[in-house]
Length: 168
Image (cartoon, rainbow, N blue to C red):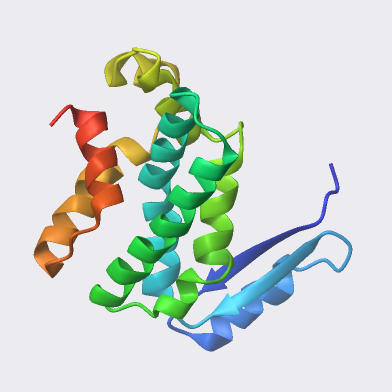
């Protein structure tokens, strides 16, 4: 539709990352940023998904934007903690590949993960929801909790979302 957008490209090779930036950038609608933190970018991109399921749960329970904003703020802190423990740069989470992607996925009605959380709170099962759409946050919640355990981190939001998804 031609709306302005941004994205982050990362690589262990600065040359390759900058080359991708040059190829993908277009000054009218697409701004590409380069990151030297592949771990942080990957973690931000993957771990936002179970947090967005949690955001959908909040909406599905009828809570408002204030509650959702509080959860997303605390969730970004948990995301930074896990990023640091896994060898990424927590500052990456403060940018587009972390908080930017997290906000988009948590607040957008187009987010499959957010819609999954809403549907779970309305009584649907994970199995039924996954027949209709791919929900990355369902398996990723287990990965997040496993890494939290390995790193000795509490991460109560990740754990609560995982428990509600998997009824544990």
